Image 1 (tube, rainbow, N blue to C red):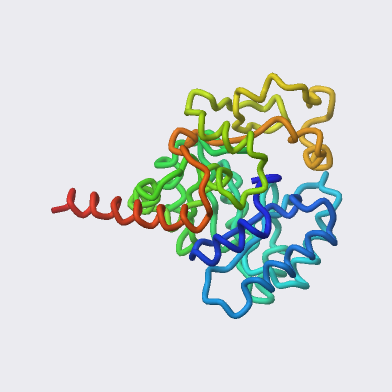
Image 2 (image 1 turned 60 degrees about the vertical axis):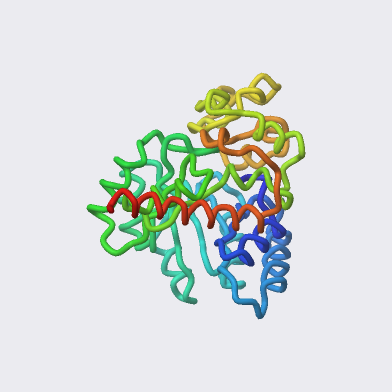
Length: 291
């Protein structure tokens, strides 16, 4: 959800009962990140709604990590999502004020490292997820994680675009799901209209998984890959400082294999209500199968 989710999307999701999150690097400075936190807290104050969260890129090439993380502690961000790295020091700091930490993992190796760091749960980023993603089949990943995760939360990410898929993920052993691509095509998304429209007009065959753009495997809309970009082969691998350059992602857009289930641009509140109806339909289908 880089350059897509901001305060409007987060607040609307939380008010609809869905945990809304955003990448910290969607704001170009730490000061801007803190301003977003204050804005979100102010708009959600006194309401009975879901908590919000922020995603942090924990990587040696991220020049803002220390400052952003310190800001998160000052503002006591309820949910912290970490990606590309995790340490016990980070989880202890978040747990110190009562926050929760969930780690994006694309492999069992990453998941085990995060569990050793005492995270509260694993976000299993499977094959078909938008943006930086893994290649594991979701059923296989959940099955192996369940054997080592104990009472930790397992969140499935990848190609979930409707409520029936949420029900299926829960039935398969996940506790929650993470939905990205479907929320790009919402009124409150910061994505440009062309990107939202392209997602609505795309299907699974338009998604290309490649490491050629950023140095790490990710899913992109094929229609945008012919646009000029700075090839990472000229660099020494993945680099966060380069990743957050506006030039890289301005015209090259990520999306997951669930694009075929995205057909309209609607308000977040309407989408969440639809997901709930579809979830109930999925539960009815499971119940009928048992009967």
